[in-house]
Length: 202
Image 1 (cartoon, rainbow, N blue to C red):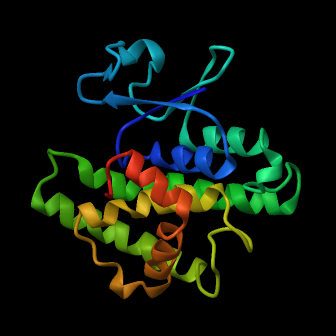
Image 2: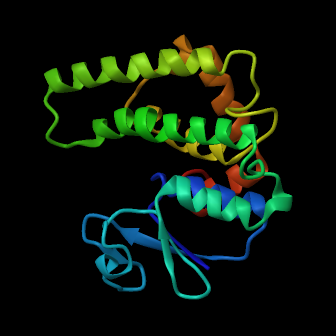
């Protein structure tokens, strides 16, 4: 299989999952603004949505959307323990955290990348981000991981999105649970391996 990615983008979540689960895979970097892959392909033809991630399966099918790709990868390597069994309450708790990450944390922090955002708009957006981080701080209280008692795909996704706070100079010091969570996930060998492969750390 092949993961189409952009360094540090939300595609880093399935990249972490691929490594944590022990998959053999290829990586292909995508120039998002120009919609071209490193190999010269037209990315629109691979993913009509135009953004990363996209996962090309061994049978040629292409899967998109962070949550879906991560759940697919976890379910097809169930022994990795990266997602609880489908139909269990634990699985719904995982999906709950994935959904919160996607619809609230990803959406609000991701909006800050808009190059046309004025200082006034940015101030309003940062207030939304702060509210979501206040909620997340409570959700992480007393927990090592985002969902359940061990590392899961929810951690890979949440860590990836929270990593953007550094780009936007959002100081996590006022959210000690979030800051500790980020440090804990960042220290994982496979996460470090992923970030090195994407050129984010040396």
